Image (cartoon, rainbow, N blue to C red):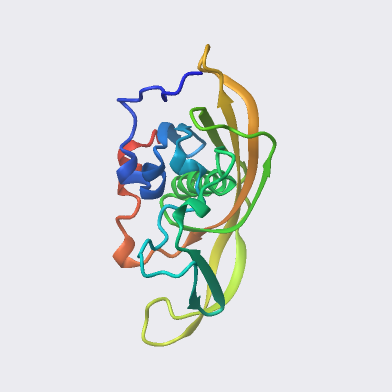
Length: 219
């Protein structure tokens, strides 16, 4: 089995585009408002529940971290957090789907703010450590503008009722295992639908949020 991801020396700098994807080792191949593609080598990090939980030796076997309304139980032994079968964790697949769909919708909306409101994912097969996963995201429903009345402060000193033009966009994200011999798509391992609320007001302090996408995207 080919345990090395295909080199992509000319691709976008993922550290600029998306820090979590960069931390996982995801590489972007194509970046446009109508299609995003990339690849991910399944490493031990991709088979863990999380790599960011506290590791303090003062933790007891199970400590409670309370952030109402959530209760998070964190194990002191990080080996407990590992996916025992050494396959791509489903949460990583969902993270890839959300990230690609959000970038695509952001570009397609003219770099206005977007927010994910719903994600569904089906897992068909597993991808083992050492496999390379290919990803593709495309829009399947751009949505018509919808009048939404909401009460929002919009970073102002007073709360006002606004009427804004928002739209819902649905993106489809598919993942395949790469065939080592051909480096082409092999068996599909997952399929996701991501619904995003688009054309949201862009706060002044985040007006440059789309600069990295503008830098690398084929618009």
